[in-house]
Length: 333
Image 1 (cartoon, rainbow, N blue to C red):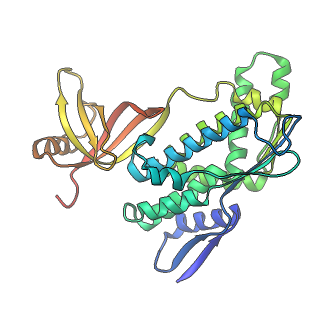
Image 2 (image 1 turned 90 degrees about the vertical axis):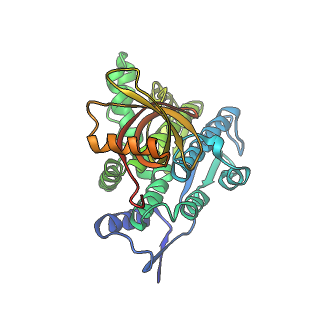
Image 3 (image 1 turned 30 degrees about the horizontal axis):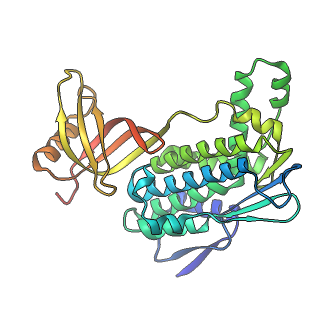
């Protein structure tokens, strides 16, 4: 078995493309991380001299929340971080190293990928697992993902602002190089094709918005080598955080009860087999395939877990507006 060592974003994208094209065989390749991924932030300003201000600490707290939520989504199929054990919280706790002079912080995220890989190795096929793990590292600490996010925020804010002066501040900002534009296409392809990665990307983007807001207090911030003026950071952070995040929950659920009082739809009370969390989801009776309706009936009558695909929104630790879009009886049944 050959080791595939990931030291840089370039290594990660190479493995990701290879896995997309040819699949991943764990009997032939063993993925190892060497100092990757690591999130580096360099700050300049009067308050930043080998120190962390309360506002910056708040940004790192949001980063920790996002990392915990990502782990819960992959490990337990829920955004609710209350399911984490004390040991898991300790294992996922980020270590922020502060350098000398103008504040330089380095956040090691390697343990996040290692822990997730160990916990979900039996839940996913090797190709899906490899794509999820590598994409997770690129989403949370890849230069391309931060450049793409900043570019997108510039485009959005340029259409929102009314002040000509503010529009001039944003206009013509370009964070993506030609090489990163091509890499961004690879990551976008994965996000479009993989529901888990799409959900993780939504969580990460919400966290980036929170971090960007705190960087507005600096003169200049450099994130993964990308320089952002403090004034620009503050402008791009406006309206960036959403009240809720779109998530996808695919897994085994028990149907606790059914509410068919509405003639146009019915609701099911679900229990996540892994997290033990309960929530209510709508079922669009008229649009859902009959085989999915049959699977739901089977799960209710037999009182046995069935496989569901659920679109929902996450607000903090709550699951809201859940809708069942597919249902099937597990093959073993």
